[in-house]
Length: 63
Picture 1 (tube, one colour):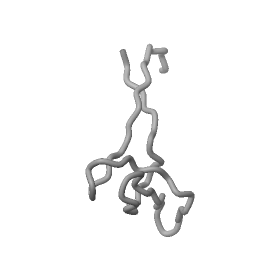
Picture 2 (picture 1 turned 120 degrees about the vertical axis):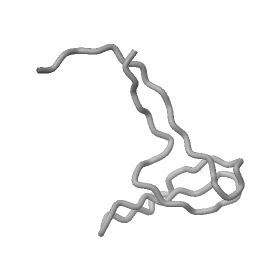
Picture 3 (picture 1 turned 45 degrees about the vertical axis):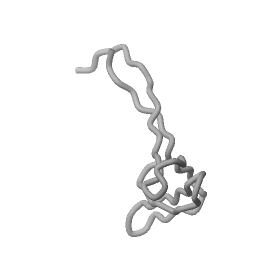
Picture 4 (picture 1 turned 90 degrees about the horizontal axis):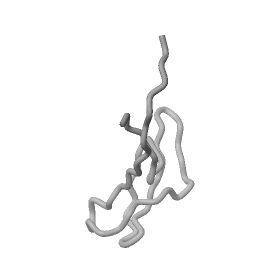
């Protein structure tokens, strides 16, 4: 059975592991085979990292 719940959105960002300063943003270069890899580039140092989700993203939590 489903029921409605009140939620609030919150943002999740990813900070670069290399420089610890820049934010990672998707480049548009994605691979879906054999698994999802979404390329992100650091806004500060240019380092490339790969994730299964696009950052920044929005999640929800129950109030």
